[in-house]
Image 1 (cartoon, rainbow, N blue to C red):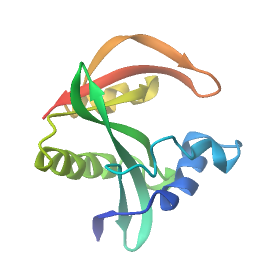
Image 2 (cartoon, rainbow, N blue to C red):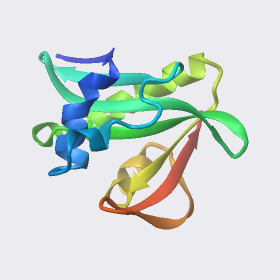
Image 3 (tube, rainbow, N blue to C red):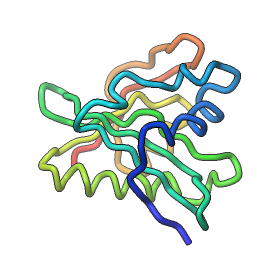
Length: 142
């Protein structure tokens, strides 16, 4: 059974570290904004196992209130099973219910096709995040 639940920031750290920053200290996945009011974290659980995480931080995009997706990670054995889509669909409902009309992220180059399939669009050129790789801003209006 798959369930999308609110989780504390600390619950995201191990999976973020394993998938997004392997070999780096766990502190490298403690993001500014994780513990700020308005930020929420979601986890997808498959039969009780945490399989996918994402964090959503109140921000701005094009001068308007928005949520920024950060630290989305899916455990390797659960990838390509629709869990990321499930997490984002839940987050989009939460964001919309809070009267915010867009979500944006700094998407890794490899993840651009995933976000594109879900209706996100690129904004601007690719840029390098040191030690992590090429990224591009992507956003979706809700």
